[in-house]
Image 1: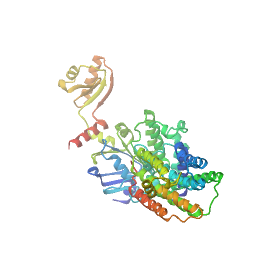
Image 2: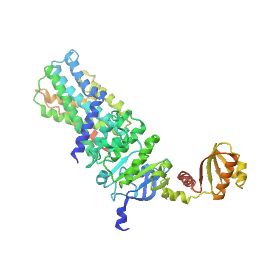
Image 3: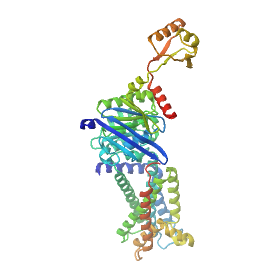
Image 4: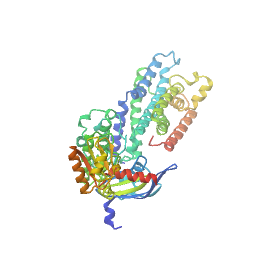
Length: 313
Length: 242
């Protein structure tokens, strides 16, 4: 591999394996993360996401395989890596008896050129909580403080383990904004998430892992494009006559179903003709269309399909 | 090791130690209370010079409170809350964290000793000759009790450490020759008490602070053994995550 390709890789994982007792948490996992990329690790609970992140952070030693972060071996070269790395654990990691600014000032003292704690408090929206001890913060506030602590050392690479779990929609949106700002500044970000909309909106590329294996890798657009679907999904008022609709679309009656009240699935390719027929039917019935999706699956559907296939295998 | 990180860590550790009310009670109020109560009501100890007996005893009690109870419980909860794990991903090394915790315990002990000596002096105690060996013994006792405290903190659930550390504190207060002489205990209990670090510290301390006594070699060896075994066990079995 040419030298500049190496330099462009912030993280490389090759043949990684980790076993706890008889459980293979990670099994021959390989992927690369380019510098400046937002990379998502997706997978069901127990897929090995957190173990992988902990190995990348240098917290656990791999059983086999090679791992490099910023060109360093996290396990053996931790003292050189840690000043350049920011970490947000899935939960915890904060002194409950301190106040937010006290914690950030402490963490700032670990780094040579830290960010300003006062500035970061504003960035994560905790200005109103500076007098509250951490144990009395809400779950979402603790997550935001934990994020600020991950960024205090101006890291080149950031690991975020389920960063928006427990956040309200507003905090979640501002966290996404913060991640985009970081990427704009050239920071590499590896995050794990259960929220497919988060991965779809935020990540340049995602890896879906199941049972410690890599099941799929690519940009959200790639993964959803390749999974072109022969289904049309739409939302409208509940109680549409599905048999009549199937007839209007020239389909067998069973190919149109109301999956949930007001959510319909048409098992046919979303051709322009079919969409036009659907629109005509709704006009004739005077039914408002609330949402329509055709031709492409959401990342969530792709994720569910891939993980279900892996479970059967 | 970066000094700025170390001093910031030690300052925060000390701040948190003093912020916990129950911690102030166990490290300061109880040792001073024992000294004042048994010193003023001398019929309980029934000794010729109760204050000369009680000052070394309460110094040993204070070391046990700071190094075993306070350090052990705080560290156990830091482990529970993922703080130790999180610190492991920062440039603060494990050695740096241990150094900051050591500094915190030592600062707390200096504060405890100053107060105990001041109260002892007010009760008529005069600072004797064996100060340097006494400091050495207090440091050795600190290693022994910190080893026990960190062994609990690094192997048990935080609640179990909390309960056990407080329970041990009470048992060792009774069996430690701190508030009254060990020879007041029944024979079998005395034998057990002599093998424990609390009695070993208070008795060896007394032997260097009381003029005209021989150095308590046996007690010193018991204390040294506890220091070596407990700190090695803590280093060997400590787990950073609960």
